[in-house]
Length: 157
Image (cartoon, rainbow, N blue to C red; front, top):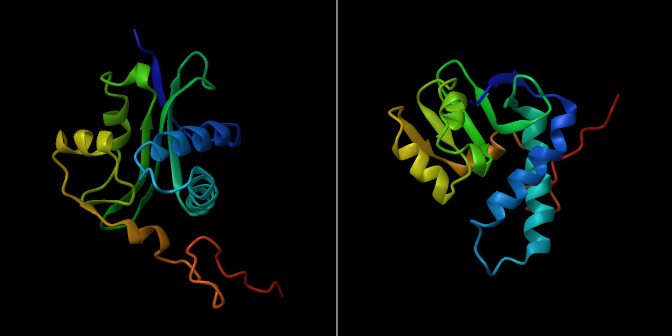
């Protein structure tokens, strides 16, 4: 029997989130993108998103450091933005992803698209829209670089 609980993100969850997100998303990425480029760029994107988003975790009730899955998201007054939802393979089919997803407001805009994610979303009833550019909605671009992974550093007073 699964004894799961929803809980807020703790700093000790960060390594799991990076590892799971990078490995699972890289499998969906085009094969002609070198892994070194993917990992360095996507790591920066995840770091940026973790700094501006909320993270909800599903963990074991007895051992809250044993994670079953997580969701990185933003809730706004009129919608939610889902950046990533991950469930460990052993817990798929046990409604772990649904427990996370059900906390989102409708409509749901999602920024990362995967095969498993599409199959999951097809089973849901909430209105949803894929919009990867929402990742950088409030991003400050470097003038010298069009790269969306290095936000402009504001001078400290």
